[in-house]
Image (cartoon, rainbow, N blue to C red):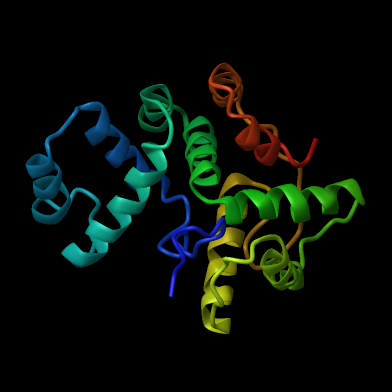
Length: 201
């Protein structure tokens, strides 16, 4: 059972960055669609091109939650930016939305770079989740399958951004976050996201 007061939640399991879909959702938000227009676009017109209205609704909701944690300026970067800029912008919103992702970057991925390690073994994810319970007493107890699914999503995100060479070979590589995204984060005092997003520096 999820604890709404917990710092760590399992709500990133619904998908990785999903850049194409995030661009569509950012466009809807920038257009200022009504609730009725939103429902029509997602569930009737199927603008996300999903196999079922339920899947479309869940994924759209997750992407909207991420994007709405930041200002419309970053929605523009998601909708109109180059692939790299838009990917980094969505990544920033995902970190703000999920401290599970942010803290894994800040505590585990950063340490691998600091130690000049060249990989990110999946064991580190399991170690991280175990230690999360020490940092957050209200954290729910997840089944092993949930922990693994969350790990799949986090590693897929890291591969999409470029911190991992791919999400099967856990080879680390540095990433320079785009200037447009860094400027937004600095101008809006997004200190936590700034720290977490630059772990290879």
